[in-house]
Image (cartoon, rainbow, N blue to C red):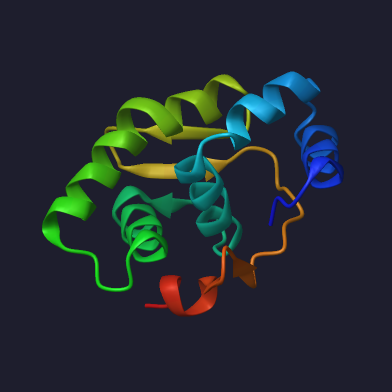
Length: 121
């Protein structure tokens, strides 16, 4: 999905954020996986579906610990950063994540993992 400086430049343009901001966001693997999962669904995406998709990209068979770590990281780090960048809105009361800026991404493959199988349910 984000392979090299051209991809980061395209992401920055599509997201309408500074290039340095795009690099800062995409430096985090979990953020990249979150964007990949979000690009596979029509908004809104429930937090639980997002957690499950990201956890499955991290491990084929995510255990409870992995799922818990992903949920904590999404709620306290990843989603607030993406929200601050204006890319999405997260409503903790409903658990819904709504993409504010639809980004063109190659969601078929990411780091050797087929996103479709990781997120289909």
